[in-house]
Length: 166
Image (cartoon, rainbow, N blue to C red):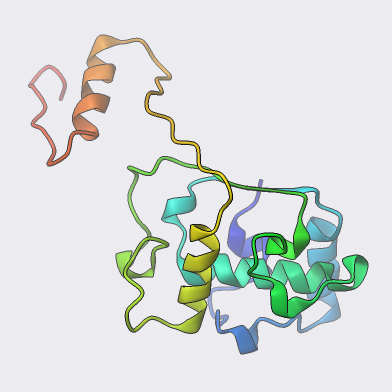
C-alpha cells in the first residue's frame, strides 16, 4: 500500500500537466519499475477523495512505466481497456459519502466547465469504469450508539447528535 503520489513518483513541487509527466531520470524509472512494471492490479481506496488531475497523472505515468514491457500505445492510456498501463485488474474503492478532495472543484465528480485537460481526462476515466457496485450498508461495530451516530452522519442535511452520542 502506497500513496498515489508515491507510486507515480510525484513530489509536491511537481506539475500534473501532461507535458511534465514523462519519466525524467533513471532513478525515477527504476523506482517506478520496482512498483509498477510487473504489477497485476491497481486497487485504489478512497477514490472519491482523489483529484481528477492526480488520477490522470498516475494513469499516464504508469503507462509510461509499462510502455516498453507491454508494447503500449501511450496515446490510448485513458481508454478503459488501456487504463493504468493496461493493468489486469483496476478497482476504485471507497465510501462515496466521505469528504471530497480539497479543493472540491478538483474532484472526479466536480463540474468540468473551465477545467484543465488533465482534469477532464481524469474525470472521464472515472466515468468510464466498467462496473459499479454500491454498498448500502456496512458496519464494523455493533454498539447501538455508534450505529446511531453513523446513521446520522449519512443523513441528508445532517442531524444533531444527542448528549449521550457526544
